[in-house]
Length: 253
Image (cartoon, rainbow, N blue to C red; front, side, top):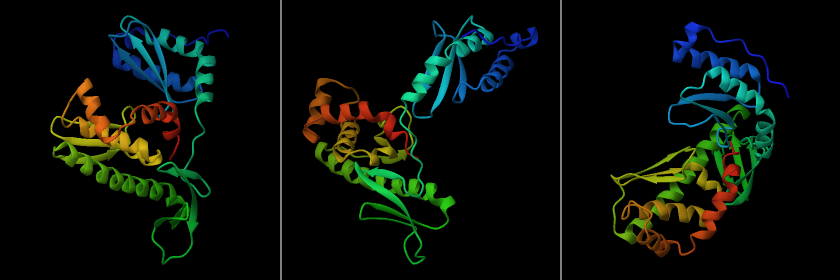
């Protein structure tokens, strides 16, 4: 495929990196390569890099020192085929709407609208997520309820494991993290992705045990892994599951 001819960046823009980057960002959007594009200048990068972020469903173009945004845009245009193949490989997005099937601790549940005004705003029963109110509010209510449920399940496990290793937890937070399923700070604060509530129970058990073990060992030494195994003896299976199904978990919501 021939490269798209792009207007040259003016000398003024070349002299102003922030302006050149903003201009390149605007023109990248106009190329319409199948997903939103973010451009990042990285002086430590050795070459032009292109990544498809499965969690955000966007494309990141990394431009190293000495390479112009113009060249970066030409590289982006030349990689249309690769971008299309990577986007096609992503699992279909599952929105939190009527009829959608969403796993809770690995068990499929169907989202249904609840017409009875006396019922709770969200209730889970008989493998259904029943949501009351206007359909426009359904996605937010489902996500909020799943986050609340994730907090309950994570907290229960974390406290039990912390008692087992004899260490206190400073606090527990839930976020929509993009790169890590959980983290542990040096102050003893634990943070987890709310999306873990979608995974099977052994996976949630493992991630919580992994982060609690960091309360004792802030590393991944053999001693750390032995400690994890005292809480969840089978570490390999849930780790492999997360690696295989990562993009699927990010497809929900």
